[in-house]
Length: 469
Image (cartoon, rainbow, N blue to C red; front, side, top):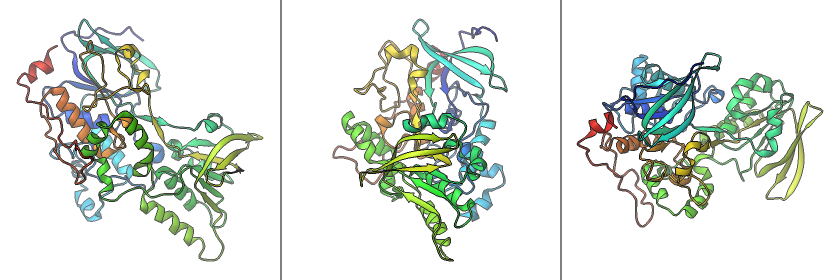
């Protein structure tokens, strides 16, 4: 391993993206169409993989295929899903398949197709620290290049005018279950790793799935289909009061438009914090087709008499949990509506308990004094997806999928990826590189609508802005 090399001081980047998930990949794809913008992206993993543990056969995206990396900002881009199909000679099969919602595995393959061709993407690069160099008015980005075994191979440093953080989310394990998930003897795994442990789970006598969202439903259905009739031995538990369908009405979906994002951002902080938990059914419910498939499968197992050996109980949360003789798990449950408690003994647990945003502070320790925060200590993020920094830091730090507290439930939605990326690039270049719609919803949110987007003025000095300090 060598010391960090000193780069050519005349060649800083205009943008460094940290993390290459769908959102920063969208940003990279749209940035590729802006010349002479110099952008590069770093990712710790050796290659792109989108939720590989949840690519269950037949599982579909919950957004239409038009919610690809670029289409809703630039349908003429070479990185559209339709162009991916054309490159694979699959346009006519897709046309006759009449699929508006594609399978997750196909979306993953599409994104990997983009990463295989798009320049400026650097995998096996772990970003270690970010600092502001006031003398050069640039960010310093320290990274470690990893070998094929994930071990440090070399150190490097990049300089950039702006940064885009797309570090994504991480699996969330409720506190009572954390000690169980860390042990090895009984399988207690997060849904993110489901496919990696599927065969081990199926060998268990009794399996419990915890979580009422789409992942929990898909895993329960997959396990149900794999178990023999009458001997399913499956429990499905959820904190929510029902195994509820996701809000998917046409007007309900307008909560995932730029119009609503702007409206939400303009609300007082206290109102936003109160609103988000009540909107869980907009993004944490279950696809109606999946609910129907579960019911159909359960019903099919009653055709010859008897009921399947399954228990589906909403309104329950796990108070505590422990192991029994290192071979089983005991869950201590409480039903919130009945105010009753019981114990459930099981041989395996799948935690479909969702994800949480990765804390930005892990990378931004050197910038902590410059970051402005809200009353809850969270970074403040403006309407252009920039961290609010003190005026001594003149470079922007844009965030992707870390702004639910400021922009609402659409932050992790793939359907807003291209619009957010275009908004960031328009702001960064100070041009209208990607003209964006002024109105996107029939609903008027509030009495003082926020439907007029921020359109940057045409900057006559774009090339000096991008190429010089």
